[in-house]
Length: 116
Length: 112
Image (cartoon, rainbow over all chains, first blue to last red; front, side, top):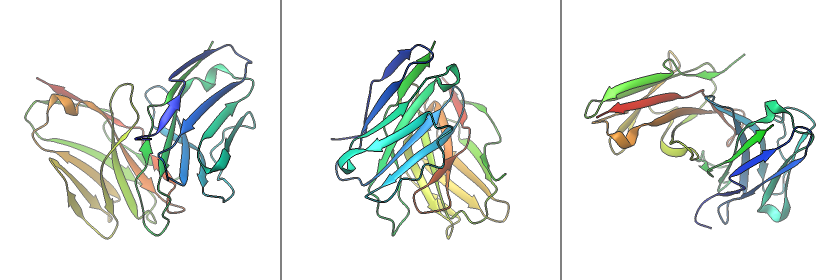
């Protein structure tokens, strides 16, 4: 696609329920990232996928958070047993993944998650 | 711990004036920096980047300055316009090529 696409754009859920957030990266981009942005805050790194390598999960805040990337393209971020403190905007980004040079990330518009 | 942060959380400028947004970083090993602009309800958009072997880089109406001695980064916007109103983030690349750490952001308000 022309850009990074995320769905849904908004998600309201009840505490304790599971949610799945989806990200479609730019076609051909091998690197994919998930970030979390709480209200009025900066971006908190969650997880990074690069090609077929094992993902860097060092930013996941708890074992309730997990992410998959199927076929090296679409990614799903899953939050189990959601808590109110999980409420935030979840941003996905992709890049071409050429590790020979530093490169910029292209972001989607995010999913606004509200846990009631 | 090491961090990326911004000096001013909110900056108000008059339309047509120049804006300067500052960022401090603490990891001297960081070698690549990016400024992003985030408008309300949208994801961050790339503005300009700079590598650590440079002190200055210019784009269209924007200039990024890097002072490695004091670990300071700034974004200068010339002739600020209402469309420049947004939150601006600096991002620092460390640990590996493509892992970025973001500051908390500065909100720029442009007054007509």
